[in-house]
Length: 159
Image (cartoon, rainbow, N blue to C red; front, side, top):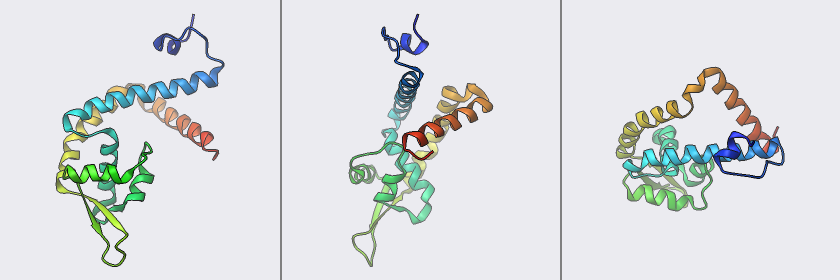
């Protein structure tokens, strides 16, 4: 008899070890959560990465951030941050301004429409988070957060 994960992904062959199973479990969990998140955002007309960029710019406040700063703060790496920001400009959710001294420096700022959209989305994503992992309770969640941070640190070689 296989593990719950093996049954879920219909894998007949056993995992090569607990490290293999843990890695697949993390990837599977991330994929399931990401899919649910994307579905919740569909009615709002944005993707999870666009939502992430908007939240980053909301957090930056009126000063905004340059493209590379937004790119470096994203949860999921994107190959072309410029295109991501272009799309948000096209949607009227952010603006970009060139620096008057150094014309190469472009600052992205969230618009009133972007802030309004996040205000509408926040309760929906908060509910999704509670439904997805909130039932674990604060102690298990704190432990999960710590374990995932440890896994990321190990993967980046920064233990």
